[in-house]
Image (cartoon, rainbow, N blue to C red; front, side):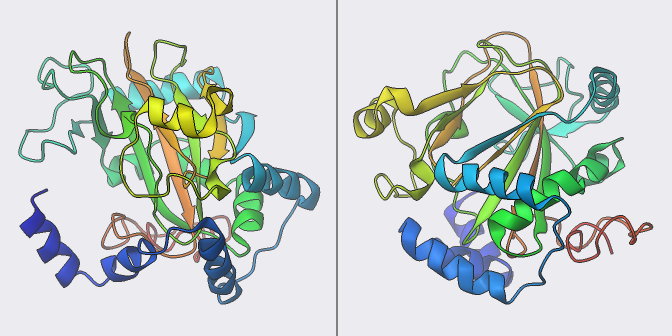
Length: 297
């Protein structure tokens, strides 16, 4: 997106104003203090399993990661892969390029990622109810200090290219809200050559390297030490929570392709989510209207 288009978009869409306001304060201590004040003004959650939720939130507070283990079965992941292979994707970094099927020859060979549309994600089996699973919401609620908002959902493929690392394949911090947490679910097996996620343990509350930019591996190694890097390989169906204000990256895919599902739980609505809810909430007794208000009306 050009700078002019970005300025026009931000100026005309009020959802972006608080987003950019919070990005001006990068101290972890200050951000946590403000997040606590915001959380007190949000609806509070009823935690169904307090002990497990507190353990997960404690891991996120200290290490920045909480592993959930398998949250989908092998058969469920196979069904999801088959479903998404039939849905067209788009390259977010080449907005003028045509949509294409994930395994087709129409993908630009420079494209390292391709995203699915919100409508297709909501229509997919299992995923919306997974995002609302009580085990997951308990941890998100405890970590945020209030009932969370599903601020954004994404499902995308990653591909090998000849150009080396691109964009989020360099170390960086996400600055999406005063406090937020992301759930990542592998929908394909992810080994060392399949684009595993990498996280710098303990960096979420560390005030070093807090500028909003990409960092070289060497710069991060020299600041935090190589022993703080954790590489998340795993089987299809395995999931982990992560405080992505901590430094992280996705390794470039070397073989095959990787499919991943992500849910962002935030204090506030996020500006890159759908402008309007995508579909009606036909199960308000199961899908909390507050938590799902961005996607379900």
